[in-house]
Image (cartoon, rainbow, N blue to C red; front, side, top):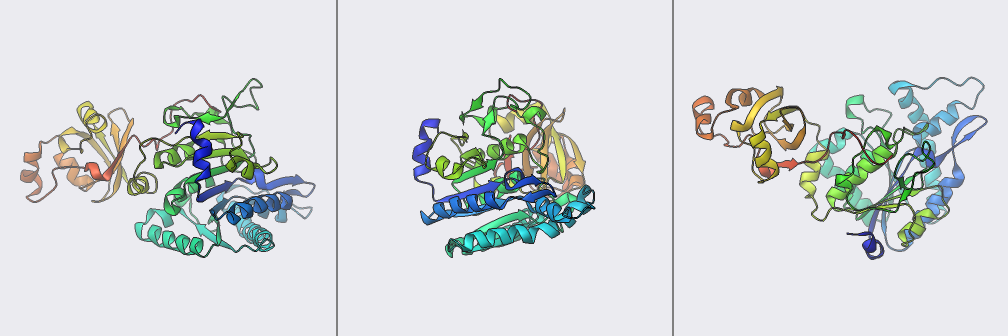
Length: 395
């Protein structure tokens, strides 16, 4: 899909996932950082207009921690909020206020909103993932508008999404959205960080995000959010693999959401890949946290990348971690470059015993009736870019 296809695709959109960042929803006051109710009203009015066009809308909203910080800092003695426990406590204060603001604004327009709080574990477990999908399905069938946020109050660090850009990209698969709109404080993507480089030029379209390198110069994190342009482009890259286009637009511009979906050339349009990944493989690649690593030789790398083969034990040179059968593992080159993500047919201890062996030698070591493949092609995603690239050309 090229930039010329932008308008034609937008005309057929039926389910939109909209992500709103903290930097869009909050403003600085004399008492500290607070939720900007005028911005909430404006965004809800735009979402409601799209909803009136019979579009399904799923809203992923940041802002709970910032809203909580604004309330806590209303007195003269404002505590220093830092670290996970403080963030969780601030979220506990702010989440209800954030949702109340949405409830009121949507109700004024005859809309029903529904709060959904998720941790990464909810989407890693296949059973809980499918249960969440059913819940979203029922809400959308009832024409409710789900408002989603990470469950900051109870999440442990190992189960954090990291930021709501990541959460939103995973929900694209779960709710089967056909458009991802990421509302941010920037006016789209630039060739480099415009705060540091006045000569930075805007990019109206990114047609091959898979080949775009993303590095730390994508822009630092905002003062109120947990992400930056790096995380937004990473989320757009995941969306592209799923076959979903992304619009990165300033949420502070007047009527920006409506204008963008109406086809106006604002922000940055990120085209999807021509050959999309299956929804099951997307879940495997991005929802599951790898439990270990399998290192392979150059011959195995070529077999996986160029010939679409399964991984055989003969190509394995090292196994790290202590994982079970069926665990998700990273498949790496001998120098640590990522090749694929896949589900192991053997425990780590078993792979250490048979690595480097030909298929017909496996039975003599582990007994009959076992798999010839260490990781089958059907349970593998090659070059899914779960690791951060070395450098990039965008801020």
